[in-house]
Image (cartoon, rainbow, N blue to C red; front, side, top):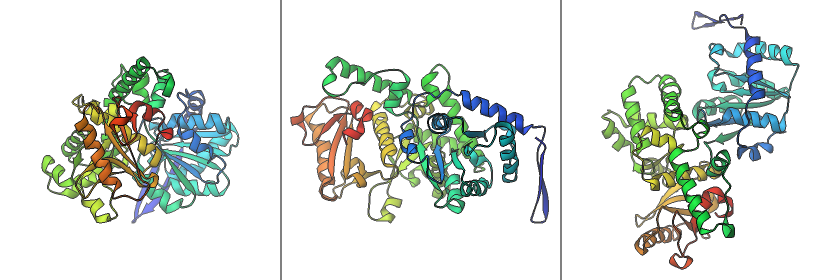
Length: 440
């Protein structure tokens, strides 16, 4: 592409040139790829996006690298804007050096190639500095814009500064249990249709899901080491390079520790001591970077005191159980932690950031508390003894006594429990993960 722009900053002249690149060729190849892209499993987010199609603002789709954002764009185009959209992938190495000043040429070339269209699908746009100004102008001119990005912090800063009131964010995660079963073509039966044999089959599918995770490439091509490749990409490209981290050994050690100890309480001070770094702030920054890249999610205790939320230990969950196992080199064989992580992800899909763990005044813990739903959840892989049941119920009783009136408690387990063994509804966790809306 023969695009040349010159700009002066602090008295210095910077020359930006996308050398030896024919922009039209790149755009034509990308559009052809997009139109032929496999639509795969229809994602749950399409239901939410259906309500945003005609709204006069940008739809921003964020999530982990390789979790299906580009495929979701193709599904949106196919279902709501068939043949009426431009597609540009800014991860294409041939567009390295693309700047905000190039957007006008981009639009002109797209219109020349394909005719004028009113919809843009812009993949991994955070790679272009200043993109939000152009997007704002296009929205004001009546264009519909769909954007994807793999860094929550960068997008939120840019959206907040330029697109306030002009965008809505939709988060996408790896496959849910239901989407995973659709991908491997298994039919699930709930309720009276589920015989003992069928229930056993459901449990075996759930165990496979917990061990392999829901990263689309890893599910469709399990023979390839997708998860290791993905983890390295996120750590080095989305974190180390983006934030200019020099101490890669500390970052790698932190990533290994957190991914190997999912669903466990930890503190920044403890992590500082484990990593032998001098500052809690360094650890906190690294955790924040990993969270921004959608690799991990620190879960806070519920409290009306912001100070307590900030200083209390966090529970760390991974974006995908299979990814966590690949990083920990299969040290995560305890499916209890994997099960709790899967439940967290389902709650994250449904309730966003309105999910906490609960610690009662009697120091009894409940795995999850969702204030907006007035719902407390205990996750226990095996309810195989009265002592275990008593412990889970005692935690719920303590929390319910301290939370607003009408708060409900449920127990999720892999093992069957007769209704008279617990004073709270107890669901097969596989059933709940498959159809949680009708059970919670």
